[in-house]
Image (cartoon, rainbow, N blue to C red):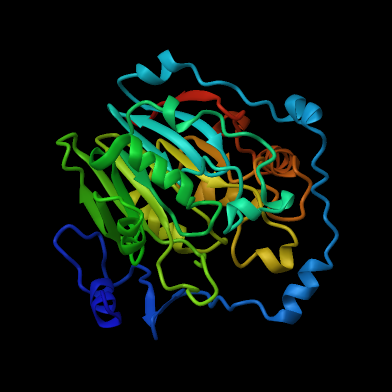
Length: 357
């Protein structure tokens, strides 16, 4: 697909698109995507040098202490094999990876089962490796119907995991990916791949009345030296009758979420990032912090939210438990019930229901 084809794809609205003239649309210019409401620029060498000099407060302790502060549970196979017939059952596998089970379908978000976020795993420095193991293996997963990919950063798109998921589930597995990423998946051996631009949606061909919608976020993309923002990024909304799940993906705080709320909300469950936000002067253009996560939770009208994107990889400089601690404080400050926006233990499974009439 050439640049002109991509440009036309962004601006041509099919009959199954939710787009309208008031919705934020990606800008595609000279082969790269540009945020329509806040410009993102590649950091200069001077900026990167300043980041390197920042003090690292993550203080990740020994494995023995981590087993106490961030235990990893083994999900119960029977619970995963027989999820409740209504509502949403979610299992946190670590970082942004969730197993979401709703209305008889099983969904994975940004599955990263590998040990590192380094582009060349065999040469990975220790600082890029996960400090909490993945909660379950690909072989132990129940049958997966679809995978939602938010963007192509290495802590969200792991080639090793994609290859092994494809090896196990083959063409029965549907891959939902941002515009521009389908080619990468086809080259990885995947066949059932559909790419989306913002607000584009599709009714599942499984006949289960499930609708998948790709929605905007404020972020960026890159896997190599020369491919910055050559593919799109965003989040996913999955709806089935009165049950809805919102996977926010990576994002900075932005008023686009009021549009997501108006068009797709409210939500039974949202997965909202709460970690990887320091130093703030540098990360605020890419990642929300716990305070902003609570604001986002309220803005999108989510009945239940899970804090993700923390406690697994050392990506930034905040204390490794700070996202969880700050989330608790921010919920109290804003008078949001603590059980409305939670963090989960690695491998923990919970059931969420809607209270809407």
